[in-house]
Image (tube, rainbow over all chains, first blue to last red):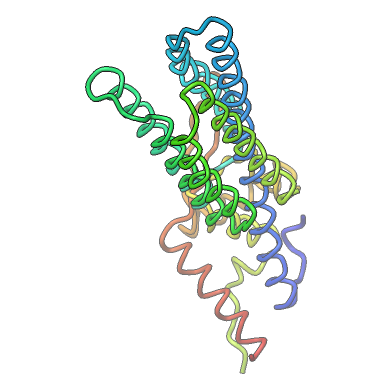
Length: 191
Length: 94
């Protein structure tokens, strides 16, 4: 790119449009890897807990859920450290806020359910996750993500009321796959 | 009569830098270089010109042991960029 090139008005507008668009794509491509990270972790963790619970019959394996943020946040932090060159735009900041709020709600509700008031944690978390996924889809203007989020939230809530606690874990496997899929969609949509 | 375009912004590289900075809170020098495809020397000169006009601020610091230059668009820069885009639009009546 040269600094002294004579540009017509049309070329200037085109340059602004292209530069903004390329920058937006680079930022969203970068955000996609966090969706892939959390989606993969959620899928693996839900399957591990499901099989351990199934094999031993001990629901205490659910405490392993707390390992998820213990692994996820440091890994995300390390990934962010390598990301210094990629800035944040309004969409990536809002996506980050939506999922941070989801994380805060999920951890707090789980702790309250364990220590204070027993409740159907799976039902609450799956609804929250569906909502967060819907918001993400709305921010990315992507209808498949919105619809999948809606189906995950509503369908997951219904399934959580119908199946036993052990089988409810598989709802989160589906949620994890959906999260990773969102990351892949973001990656390919912004190539 | 077409409006006069801001000569500081009517330059390929400076306009690209302003277009990137208008959409983010701040951007690293490395990111700007990658997005514009400019050489470090050329980009550095143009950034200095934008900073001298108070269109952007430049902050030099460190990320760990690595030097890091961060650029941010200023309110003056936002306004100048908006005026430039508005002026360009007048070249293409709807």
